[in-house]
Image (cartoon, rainbow, N blue to C red; front, side, top):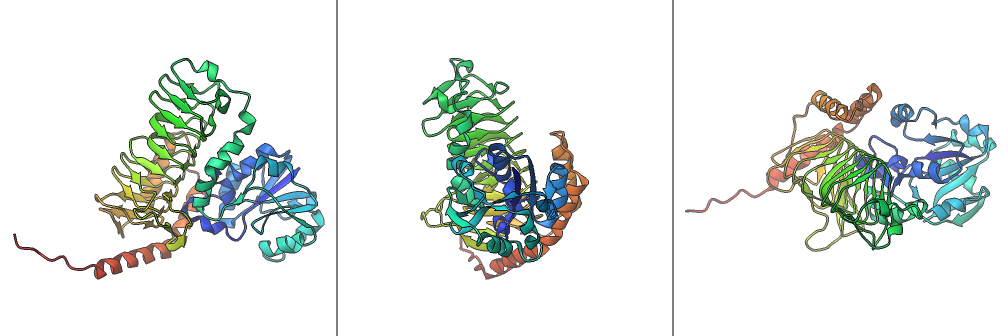
Length: 432
């Protein structure tokens, strides 16, 4: 099977977490959308169609993939899949080349004939797909179409349940020892033979499965509730991991985490609460960094993605943090906060701004105008080298382009902060 995964015109609705990657490389469950497709479908060759500014870094990471190559589509019938679709395994098994898969009136799958490929380069991608789709039978298919980052978080527990299916029947509980407590069915636990689970760990699978991937280390006095995925090489350090959590590869996680996605290569080493959040790679959350994920009045949470307030439709929304952002100790994020790429956050003993644009410096709880891009890039190099990873020239160029692209967003946030400060009432001095 030939597979092409694509971003549609609503791919920009994910704010800072998709600034440096296509939407189909965002985590939900145990996989990204693209990885799930190549894992569960009989794919022989694959390609992607994504924002042009991401093509160079994606080609560097996936050198064998066809990228934004319309000529490649003419080499044979190709299954096109919307990168925002989060399918069940059953939905993937039911794909029919003569049908168009729909979820909530959004086209999510379509098999393209080579003769139709030319249409995609002549008019906008979404319009062309609709023209082609009208020549086929429409079928509603299972799954969810994500539109914003909180959709990934809210769907994560369900996706973890579905992704775990291949691991059943391969439980390794008998190898864990009597000092590891498994609450629930051992068949819902899969621990890789190369992973380490120390004594006095609790694995609670009464509400869902737990999957511990290769070379992960679960330190003593850690409690994990399913459904949960612990990625390759990650370490849990006396952590309390609540159900519905995904921790990607090479993370260091302590404290309490609830229903969150930590994409990979991120640090939350110390105590502090992270709930209903999405954290991108190379983020470091300082000791006692904490976010709120529910308002006191239980009302719907609004999120300022890229500065524009959006209704989430949910009363439980945490924070969304872009790549390379660093927080100092005791940073406090408000409910529904959006934090951009490569920010430096120094708290001031109070709630931080809900909207922190990319490449911002927060000092004493307020946005500061001074921010050094070169210093930020040097810090990124240093952080990545600690994991034997290089900040490549292509990645640096992408960061510089994103810095230029977000200049207006930063200026608007500074203006808003100044206006808010000017409108604040002057404190009245009271006699002693």
